[in-house]
Image 1: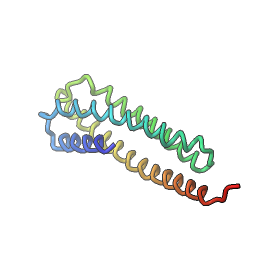
Image 2 (image 1 turned 60 degrees about the vertical axis):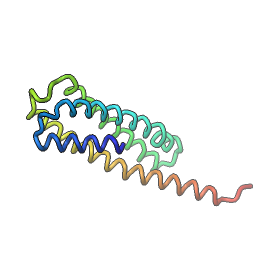
Image 3 (image 1 turned 90 degrees about the horizontal axis):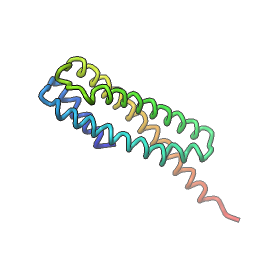
Image 4 (image 1 turned 30 degrees about the vertical axis):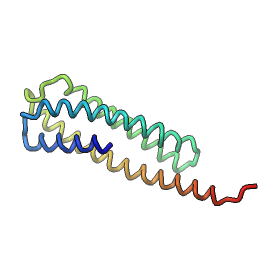
Length: 139
């Protein structure tokens, strides 16, 4: 995720500074971010959300389901943005691209920030539950 965030930050900086000459770099970075976020999404679902949902704790399971849904929605939103600009020379429609890129990067970064905080809470609760289970005497 860190590489994706770094790429988004760099691309946003180029766009905010109106660096149309960076269009090629933006294209490559956008494709790289799309791939990285896809892998990150699959990891979160398989390694965090799905196991917590299966665990059955009502509150944590509800949180994991909500996070998974939000993640899927953000993935679809970013995917649509990616598809829209993937085969277009952004320098030809710079202002529209600029506006959309700034809005998308802001939405995506906020989503990742909030999601990261909630994942931290889920993982801390998982670690706490595991520690409590270890402290229980066995028969």
